[in-house]
Length: 361
Ligand SMILES: *Cc1c(COP(=O)(O)O)cnc(C)c1O
Image (cartoon, rainbow, N blue to C red; front, side, top):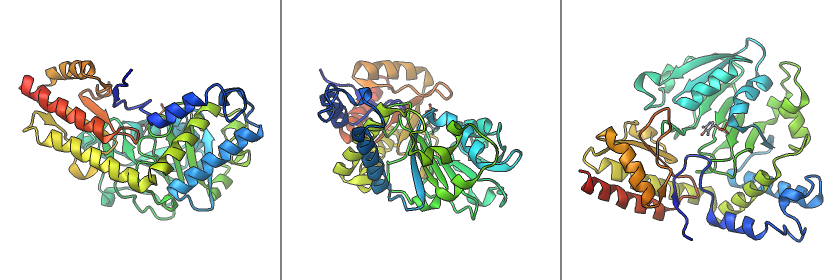
């Protein structure tokens, strides 16, 4: 059996080596004579695996001391609400910089617990750019400033992390975490749903500065308090053991591949190939995102004749290129190029695109 070229936006392709290892270990995990899903999360074997996963993630991202790493549940969407629950007092302002769908969602869910304020937005240009730093309307008393470092649907990615003074910077990095090296010290809190670049859905990785865990803006059930999760090493209750294990395998794989410097090199090469195919098509394929803000993780484009888009998606599917249909909110084509997607897959797709243009020119 040959596997499809998988360009899914999420849940997305995982490294084949990770899947093979999980398959090998499925019936007998490390001599346990049971799978990792069938043993106690309080047992020594699982605790060792969990600690190693955290250490590998810390190593990959160079997480400084003074930050906790949490392995949580609920998806990124739950944390749209849970972040303000933990960080903002009732009615306290929280500033959001919005350059796409997920930032909008974060601000609207956050509004149940904070006075979420759109400090800047590129909605007016159809989310094809990142708002100029000079235009941001920030409040120095805000609970935090929220950004979405990669807008998965609109295909926009931040290259530079902005300075926002003493207000903690909070980032939803669901779709670009671990795709390039990162200066974690610029952030107060980073969160990411795992299903784009880490592992299976149902797991959220969070990196949070310890002083933020001291905030206690309202009484909360313990299960919603990040400080409680940190104190319990993310095991206040039964964690997503399978997700944690697969994330750990992915972190090991990333280390073996040469870490995030190498990932950035590969991701840049893949994106350059694909954007070159789009830009070199004489307008047959079109991407409207400001060049400096184009995502390396999610490349979106339209065909010159949008009526051809379903034909393109169907023909691509036939040829083994999976999941190219754009998000239902936006239409068009979307090609997701997370760490597990190979340059070979991208080159094959570029060949397909040229051939499609020749046949349907
Ligand atoms: C996929 C995605 C989400 C939603 O994640 P869930 O885990 O489904 O809640 C949020 N933000 C970004 C940037 C995403 O890519």
